[in-house]
Length: 436
Image 1 (cartoon, rainbow, N blue to C red):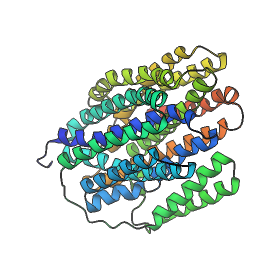
Image 2 (image 1 turned 120 degrees about the vertical axis):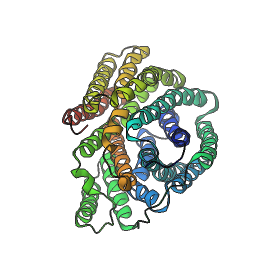
Image 3 (image 1 turned 90 degrees about the horizontal axis):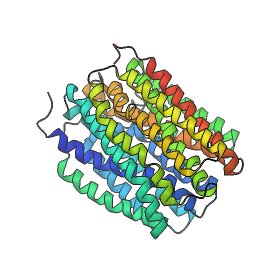
Image 4 (image 1 turned 90 degrees about the vertical axis):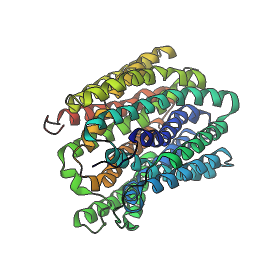
């Protein structure tokens, strides 16, 4: 039985934090070419944010179960907002990197709480619409982020972009204080060692990939292997809920969201660098080119949510991945031929259409059937998979970009998110009707 709270007010408060994160994700690719650092260092600012998001996320999902999802959400959001202020006043590359890392820690704390709360306050037959509304809000943020970020950076500089986000974050924090419900806690215990293994393993792996350091890659893989072994033995106190992987729809859905995370986090890095440094587009124009993606997603996401409650979500996801892959293939062709910048609106249109039929169906099919007492851990693992994909995507794309001039490496870098889209389509097709 669902608690006597207004679920839509809860969703609105949760979505305010999600909106802030997606605004940042829209800002960063547009303003990254403006930062006073080389390509490798600038891309590392995105990598450190994603790394600090993904490493503790399984633990923060369990923190919500143990200490209350409302409190963990609000603390994480407060850290995130404070980090935005620090980024705005940063005085060196190192200080900006610390700020981005703290942003990641804050996001790791509050993002899993949303996916843990939504199944607890919405009935099963309305969860598809809830996730669709979540997707619409994400589409609006994705529309505003690049356009406003480019305009702010053009007129006021890149620091102003962080201050603008901090102001939005303060509003989101107030909304959370007012609207989020206090729900029963499970009292589970959280241990520190798995978090350290996760952070160290992923950090070394990402650093090694981005800077071509094989010892770092191997040692990082070793630490992650120890983490997986402890999860299988049950000595990690449930940090990685490996039992969820035995749930077919959860496993395939998590693979799909990892593929989508890989693509979404990485695909605009080479595109924005190429548009601004090779094609000569301004940050404002570069941001505006992404607008069709969000417009199509905004219009079609409610349709996807409606169909999710009535059709096979796996087939919807496969169609979405395939359309997105076609968009990236077009981007490669346009870069290779040196097409005019506004042709890229066709690319972002296809990405918007495809993405609309991935996010809501994937979230619904992945979380459907998870016992209520495991929703926090499941949401943590689900978001972890997305962020792991994002971390690896940014690291691999960054490694390609630094190997030559942007004019020669950009189209090669876009091949990586294209391949991830193909993997996502295959994992979605593997879902059977009874899984969905």
